[in-house]
Length: 344
Picture 1: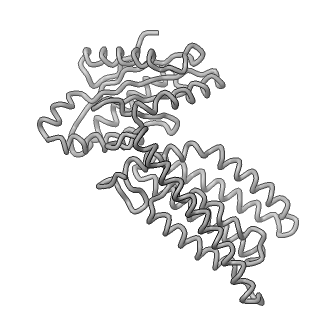
Picture 2 (picture 1 turned 60 degrees about the vertical axis):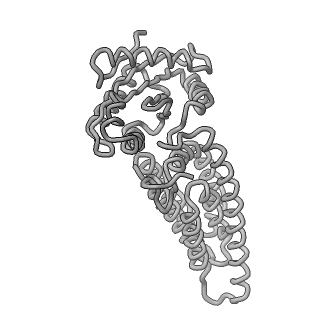
Picture 3 (picture 1 turned 135 degrees about the horizontal axis):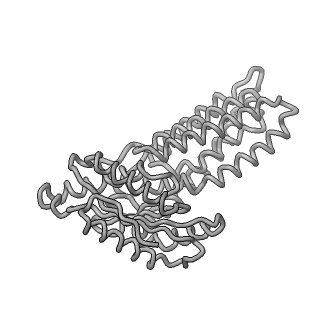
């Protein structure tokens, strides 16, 4: 596991942060399905408890979407995503409290959000999240005139489910993260590496085919990066690369993916981007990097852009990468710190 300056109490480093952002994008469809299933269950109970419980679910869905959006654009997405977890558990506890407390049919729902707790956060974050959930469980189960032994048995049963689900999820996620991180993530920046590109590109290509949309690649290279290492040292150069990765994440759209393909070389995959879109995105990124001064060093980047219809591409992105590299070399020959688009 990586650590250091990029670590927080919720996230152990850039590897975990990249996985968190990727997971945040990947689970959008599953989260929507979860809300639809929850809505069906609440519609059944609405005639018993009142239709306000449906409103609680809708408020939760809207708030969760905002937290995900802010997290995707933040340098520290773990704080936004943990806030989303707390927000969801508070709303769930609120609904449980007013639908019967310890006897509410929705009491086990506090366990659902805990399924994803180990997928997003560090061990400390998991323990804090579990502690908060147990407190929410106790508060939500309060109610007058309830036999204490019966309430305690019910609460302990649900707490057991929450603990087991979280523990199993934690072990599975840590194992998956170790093997996947070693294989597909760059340990310095936390970005995906070249080995991860073929499978991810094929997914983007299939989505673009369904939408009859193009795919753009942006080949990015730091100008005169050797001078940075020679002047400031390799440790400072590594810090520049780490902070540059964060700058790029913020500057890009949430649907774009960035890979570290070499020492100071990066590749951006932008599904659905026309050449005009891709050039505008590249210029925005170039300007953001020029003004960012990662690790206190002024750097610039050159970018080569290519966009092609998805129906003319195979699952192998090598040819498209060569075209983007050619455009990148043209940008460097033209004076660096600029964007060059490949000819159609």
